[in-house]
Amino acid sequence: MNTIFRQRLKELRTSKGLSQQKLGEIIGATCSAVSYWEKGINEPKLSYIINLAKLFEVSSDYLLGLED
Image 1 (cartoon, rainbow, N blue to C red):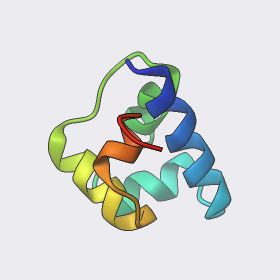
Image 2 (image 1 turned 90 degrees about the vertical axis):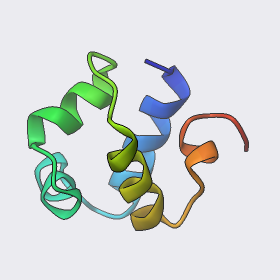
Image 3 (image 1 turned 135 degrees about the horizontal axis):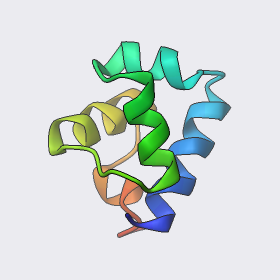
């Protein structure tokens, strides 16, 4: 998994004061899934990337490290 995605996800999540569990609840994923994404063990499905981008008000390209 893209290191930039992992870093940005964690930074955005913590800047909003969200736990991995709360973030998972908001976007319909499990706490384990969020943890695995942040550790680079698994990659999120497109639907989760879209939900994350909407929640954090950033582009999916930003989340994926394709733009700054």
